[in-house]
Amino acid sequence: METVVITGASRGIGAALAREYGAAGARVVACARSTDALDAVAEDVRAAGGEAVVQRADVRDEYDVERLMETAAREGGTIDAAFANAGVYHGTPGDTDLVEESYAAFDEHVRTNGRGVFTTVTEAVPHLADDARVVVSSGAVAREATAGFGSYAASKALAEALARQFAAELDAPVGVVDPGQVTTELTDEMPGRDPADVAPMFRWAATEADPADLDGNVLTLRDWKRATR
Image 1 (tube, rainbow, N blue to C red):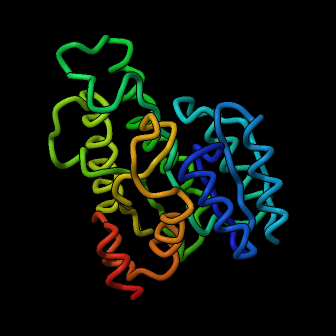
Image 2: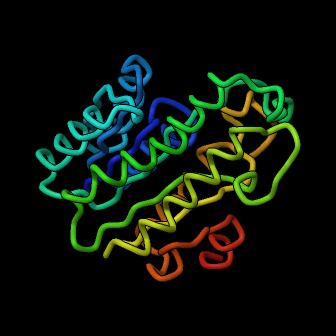
C-alpha cells in the first residue's frame, strides 16, 4: 500500500488530495495545526477505501514534523510521496501591499510557507522510499510579481527556491505544482477551480509525471492537461 504524507490536509487542496489518495486505496498520513477538521477528512479517506492516520503538527516546528514523518514510516515502512502543502495568508489576497504589511504577518508567511517546506522535506528524507517524490504547492505569484500579494508571494518564492535546491542535492525528485487559481479559504474564496478538480494533478505529479520533468521544476495545469489528454 502506498504511503503519502500531506501537510495542511484539513482544508482546501490538502483535504482534496487526501480524499483523492483515499479513493486510490492509499495510506494517507495527514496533518494540520488542528485535528478537528482532519478527523472529517480521515473519515472520507476511509470511506473511499484508503487508510488514514491523522496527527496534529505545526510545520513551523521541526519536532512536530519529525514526529509526523516517524509516524508515517512506522505505519507504512517508507514514505512514497510527501506533499509540502501547508500554507497561510494573513490579510486579504490582492490587498496586502508589502510596504503596508506588519512584521508579524511577514514572519508568519516566511515561517509557515517557506520554513514549513524546509522542515517537511528535511524530516521526510530519512524515511523516503527509493522511488519517492516530494511535491511543493505553489502559485504564479511566486514567479510573477503581482501588486497586493506582498510577503505571501515572497514566501512562496522562497518555497520554490527551496524545492530547486533540494532537487539539486537529493536523489529523490523534488518539484513544484502550480494548479492555477483555486478557490480555498486561504485565498479568501477568490473565484477559481475547485480543489477536488486539481487534486488529481498533484497525484499525477507524484506518480505518473516524468521524474525529470518534476525535479527542480514547476509543473503547471497546462503540463498536466497536455500529459493526460
